[in-house]
Length: 124
Image 1 (tube, helix red, strand yellow):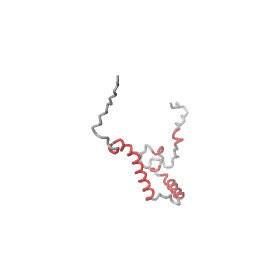
Image 2 (image 1 turned 120 degrees about the horizontal axis):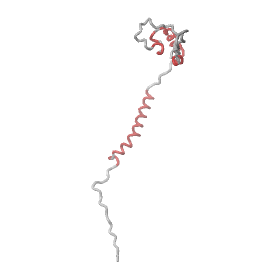
Image 3 (image 1 turned 90 degrees about the horizontal axis):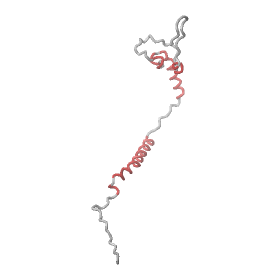
Image 4 (image 1 turned 45 degrees about the horizontal axis):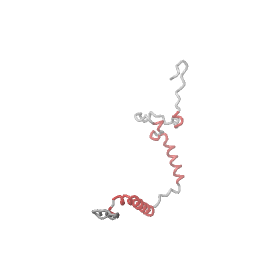
């Protein structure tokens, strides 16, 4: 008995395979690194063409002048600390005491009610 092998041939596809640039997923993979390269070149161009802003040579003196200006103008209502000046939007301009002791964050967090007078019950 002789066994003959019959070769089955696969039918060739109807269309030939497309070149790699015709596939969308390839361009999706290329787009990420290409975007980074373009952004890097743009950043390099900006860094080379524009100058860096310089700190003023007398920055310390300017800071001291700003502090003096703030200290001199501390009596105005516009420069009050938020804890001290809030809720006074409808208050007439002369009603806020400018010489009041400043309220800091540590003292504002622990506001203590006044002690009761003799003969009065303690607040709850």
